[in-house]
Amino acid sequence: MPHTTTPDPVDRPSSGDIVRSLLWTAVVVGALANMAASFGGADTWVHLVCGAVTVLCAGALAVRNLRGRR
Image 1 (cartoon, rainbow, N blue to C red):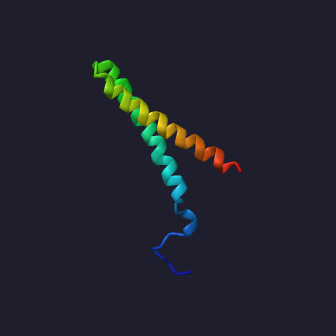
Image 2: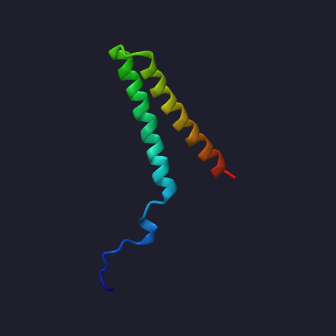
């Protein structure tokens, strides 16, 4: 059996997996940034932006999960 350098297509992550990972990363980063802003005494707009990012990404994850069940 010859050795090849190209990975098996089954081993590659799908675009859905990449998007889900990025959304989860954005949720965690948004929550951590909001917590850091709370401890740092940042302005209200910083909290609003961090919260909006967290809520939008969590909502996108929920929608993707619900659509995937059909």
